[in-house]
Amino acid sequence: MRLWPADETLWLRENGAWRPRAARHALRALASLGRKGRYAARPDGGAKIIAGPVSALALLDAEAEIRFVFRVTPLGYGEADL
Image (cartoon, rainbow, N blue to C red; front, side, top):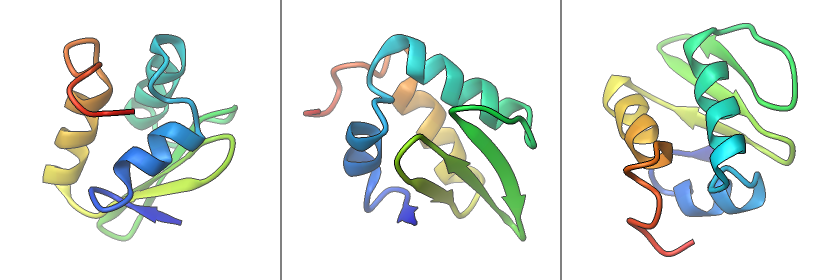
């Protein structure tokens, strides 16, 4: 289990979420919790867990969720070293 934001770059790298198509799938999973597939998301108490092909990421609060969305949207590509 990875935690946002401490492990954000690691999770994005190991799950390929820096690629536009994968980012769209991760965002779709987050928008519709309970979705099955290569990327999936589920609520866990006050947090949301996004599972990628390799590992899971815990977004502990709404701020972490917002930062995740902005990080993997097209405007966020290239803002950090991947």
